[in-house]
Image (cartoon, rainbow, N blue to C red; front, side, top):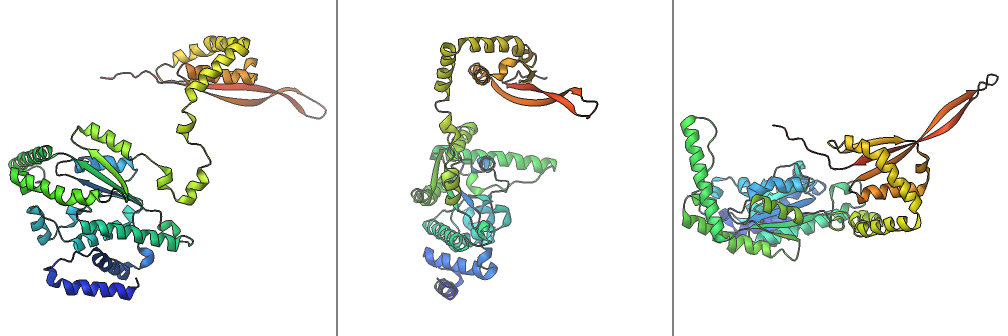
Length: 406
């Protein structure tokens, strides 16, 4: 669709909704209207949206505010979350929200897209409270389609780094109706008590108290709005984007553990396909450690039956030369030993030493340092003859002892 067609869509939207009395429910029309405005305001090459968008939805009292910071940290994002209810701060929107209703789709979509264009959200954003309606769901799909089109258009240009592979996560924090109502009312009581203390002492700032947090029926209606609109809207995205269902009825720690598992890094899904193809020839760490324990056992038994003399010397060396130093560093958990023992010149002995420490629960690292030591000087030519000294630096790491302070 060209710019003239987009402008026609805007005109059509205005014609169908004079004075915003009649809300248009055609997602394509709404999105085209907002997109045309963005093109005119910023230009196509500046429509650089967040690479990763985590759409955070949840029932009232599910702990979205509590868990947002943890989600941001889990994804390595330093920006603040985008709370849609905070974006909608007009008087008309406030009245609708206080009654438990929803704000018009075009207004929501326009505010959200403009916010996602801010430089602070270039790497990613947590979007709290979007989408909440079927129209917003379709607008989200259209946005991702546009992001992919822009990425394709600029892929082989100097601007390609600004139009990266979009990643969309749908994260739903769910609690049942009973828990939701209890938490809403508790929040209301807590805010009331806090505000009373502020008014009495004059210290602090008053917090906003939602009318729905003071009345059981209002809290119940708010939950029902979530189930009838937001829940249905988010469920419809399960087959399109990464979908994460989090049972938020439990404790904060339990919910955080579930979130961590759900947001684990997956390179095949997050990297550009060309980047992933280049890296995939390298094995994943988790793949090479699956049989590590069995392989360690097999190697140690082979040492015992095929090279018992060398293994015996290695164990004796560890026992008498290394362990006394390790024991003296039992608090720090790190011990370093320098040795010139000729035993370590045998590659078999080095491999055995590392494996023996691994079997005992330590991590051993060996570095070889070659040092030129002067032996004689030719007085006629001035040439210094040196011999090479091999020093093996053995670093042993393990979990140290924690000293309680109090």
